[in-house]
Length: 480
Image (cartoon, rainbow, N blue to C red; front, side, top):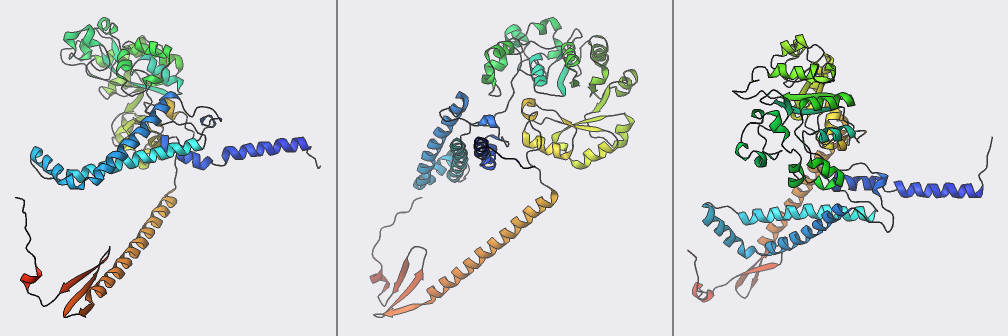
């Protein structure tokens, strides 16, 4: 059954088609530019701007201004240092006198300046191209938006869509397991203000009452260790500044309420600690009796007394942090391997999957590395940037082995052709030089030999004059 479109409907469709073309006409170009400039390899509609709107937020505007300033400064430095060849020797002699050994530091400085200038230039050109396409600027940032090992950080991870939570656990001197990555409290608390004489004391040698008096979030705002504290809103900054040392019980309660898996490293207390020999049992007591988390939600990582833990708490998911033979992993009833990302391999993943052992890699916070782990077939990863990785719906770049081999074969063939062309050119050029240097012209009892050079023709004159007549008296200066 045929149908007809009214002129108004046709005009609407034509306008829609034009809009779609405007949107996707340069999608590949914009995606490439965004990926190179800010490691964002997917183009989002919200990234475009309307005529008259600002191209970016204040932070990105400052970053672009600094980029332009860096380009200008490096350009000026590169020009003057490139022209200061007469001073290279003095610069190297100065360093020789200070360091005691000779090295062409002037050339090294020139290469570094050229490399930095090239990098800045490429970034600025990419930014200009993005602006010309009406795209907002998003320079790559390492996103960490809350103080580590605090309830706020885990809440942020849950909001970002994380399936599990990872932390580090130690035990206070009065038997309260709490979250702390470092051996001491110096980096992530204000222990230097509250206990100025105990800054070097191990974290496990404090009582829980003393730990509760410490602030575990103000350092994040004052030091801004990852350059991202400015992304927090006013309420979030107030919340971050009030974070305290988190107990294992509070951490497990949060995971139980949000139905998340947990995995943690368990640090044995130092010598002289009351719980040095019972730290395993004390931690299990908190899991079983002092929190509402189900044992099956806990990936048990500590290898100490694993047989005892498994026999008394069979619902815990036994997890190994070491790459052991498959037979040993199976005998220990390991269900998951927790390995550093440098251990990543497709063969290992397949071998473990064949015996029902999943793999988790840590710490992966970059999209390209996450994509590689994805293609390797790992089951999960531990990350410091869940808000970045959770938005990915597919690997950034996937190439089959045949495509990869074809790419390098073509590259090798092109390189071979290029090298052959350069060789033939130099061979032809050397033949020309040899032919020209062999020609001679006789004039007025003198012999003129013509040598072809890169810039001009040089004529060498030889005649019957004596050596004394030919050579003027020249004063020479020799530097010692």
